[in-house]
Image (cartoon, rainbow, N blue to C red):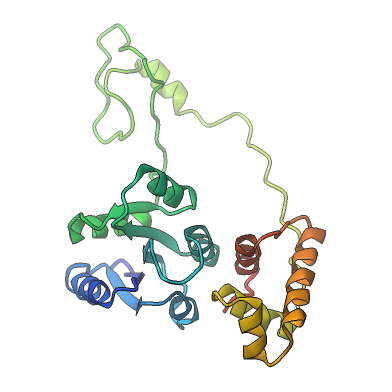
Length: 252
């Protein structure tokens, strides 16, 4: 049975890079369907094929949304994210990974490295993985050879008895996390305002596009923040409000 191909989106605001990557992936990644290839964030989230299985995203887009918001929105929609950039500072890479990206790849790397990262982002983790403690020593008795195929187990690091003990299931299961509160309900007008706001428009621009007053937009945003506060999910700033809206399916 042929494995189902994963759906891929690529977003980069340099059309030359976008066209090159799109052509390369189409020719060299038979396990992926390139369903979205766009140069703007608004085009990505409004595309009928969104969300794909994985989004390959440029770090530095011209649109004002931060990397935290972009990665958060994609993940909330169910897509893994791989970020590429010419920026390779430790601080920026840490920021990208802390935002929730599965992988970071420098643009100085060959395209094959991007493909490997994209594949890795949608590869399920192994059913189990055991890594011995740092500094553990080989057990005595000549039992230092780990069986073939046991990834994550350091050969000679544990005795057979210790290994069997480590693989035993826990005696008790951790309690399930509490269910999230029901999302607040918003009017169609509020949702339209929220979508324009999430696409990078400020309240004045949203007001002009909706033919309403800017103060009306600001009050609508305040109401939505207050509604999230009421259910215990604060949304005090732009990024958090957009993330909450994405989590609740309000962004289209």
